[in-house]
Length: 139
Image 1 (cartoon, rainbow, N blue to C red):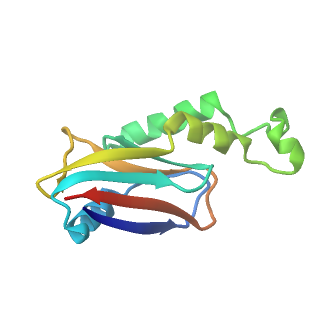
Image 2: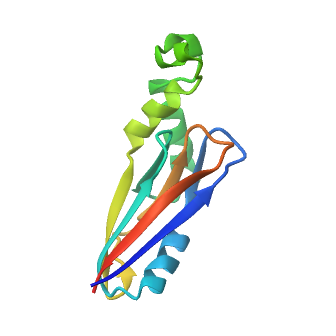
């Protein structure tokens, strides 16, 4: 069995961001030389997410508005977590909603996606360096 472990690093210019990382993942699948297997992609920080969806501007805006309605950043005093001196309780909740990781099948050396599926890194407390683990296993 073959395996590959790599880390992608992100440092967004904004507190919240949605980045299509599919091209980087596809490059790593090629590098792994795995023809049949699985690709795990997971955020290694509790205020960031990895998820699969369509790469469409309106949809990303909808996600952002939906998340802000469910877990608004302000008032920061409205969260018990923020009483510890933090101001990012909303980012932790947003991560729970969008998910920690994805697992994608690799078939014939390529990510085996449905129509329009892409892998995204979701940042909810950015402007600092964070990493994403990519682990590929298979034959």
